[in-house]
Image 1 (cartoon, rainbow, N blue to C red):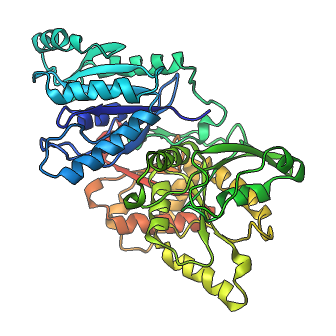
Image 2 (cartoon, rainbow, N blue to C red):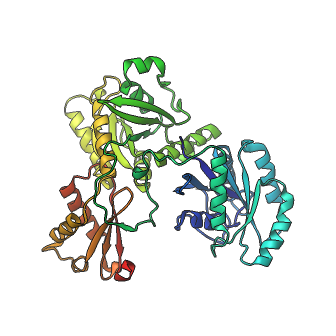
Amino acid sequence: MRLPIVAVIGRPNTGKSTLFNRLIGRRVAIESEIPGTTRDHIVRKVRSPSVDYLLMDTGGMGGGTTDKDFEDDVHAQSTLALAAADVILFTVDGRAELTKNDHEIVAMLRKKRKRHVPVILVITKCDTADVAEEAEHAFHKLGIADQILTVSAAHNLGTDELRGIIEKHLQKLHFEKDGKNEKLRVKNDDEDEEDNDSDPSPNPNPIPRVAIIGRPNVGKSSLINALMSDPQKKVSPKLVSDIPGTTRDSTDTILRHEDQEFIFIDTAGLRRKARIEEDLEGLSVLRTLQSIEDCDVAVLLINANEEVSNQDKKIAGAVIERGKGLIIVINKIDLVKGDARTEKVAETQRAFPFCRYAPILPASAMTRENLPKIFTLAQMVTRNMGRRIAPRELTEFIKDAIHGQPMSALKSCKLVTQAKFPPPTFILFVRNPKTIQPSQLRYLENRLRERFDLQGIPVRWVTKGPKDRS
């Protein structure tokens, strides 16, 4: 089942970004009193015991800046959010009167949202009971909401209740938590509590969820077709075309290789935002980002006949930011001959210096060259995502890694442990976290990968002081 989307909309400066940051538990969206600060969608995964979902922060609708092109762009993207959303949080400022823009958004909600999608009217900046009571009475006449709630995100008032309301609406829409691969799901960055359980995964063979991603027309659907068995191709082949953008949505295909099942997600191509002109194209981008959030391993396809583009690098960056495993496949390698093949792999390695841990596989959907290796790599990366290293081994590793090195700050480390959820996140308890340099953590990461062979996955470090152990 796909992850549902909860979209936060409203006119500028109604507290959308503050609410977004509060609901995900950390500061990601930029908070500012200047209207129009948020332009692009910001999407993060939110976890709860009953259902997980993607929370989307959107730009302010209805003006408020002096940049007409900016406002048109934001308005178009917010309209896309309405088309994609499963639950809508419509924010209004509890300290201000209703405006023409608020009524315009209400009219758009009536026209653009899917009929079954609930709207929760969130009255923000209600710091006192008097403000909340007066605001709720004033905004009730909008007549658009399935539910009305007053909150103060800045003071954490009403936000827990809002989380519960969101979850109940999603459950009514038959969304539920996917427990099948829960141990392989990414935990929020702030959820880094220690866990000394060094036992291996209770499920050594989880079903990998593999998202095939990349720019349009690099052969994503052709690749999945080539991975299918002949009987499955006859039943459900993927639509293939030379026209970029043929695949508009994300679709799942279950494939079996050597008694292991894999779920492959074929996604729409990610284009540069300047080229996203049609509503459908923009929606495809949202679906791709949604698929990245919901996968365990992303397979980034690049074209052997083209140079690695900035867009390819941005796509890889989106995978890393979301803590997913990564494999880079150079498709159409059959068109490259001789020494040019070796040079193409080397060129690709140079183009992705920020993810040298990602395996690079030259392959061809046309000739099926090296395709079975995708299954092997996906299985390996999935296992590494769930890899747990015993505290004793971690302690020995740290001692060995810093021995003889000029790292006095790291030598104060008295405890190292691994957080519960992937990607592998290691917590260092040191005397003064502020003295730990990024270069020192990179050094530790390189040594860690050498010792434990952590291919295909990001590694994260958290530094804490002595008081954090209590």
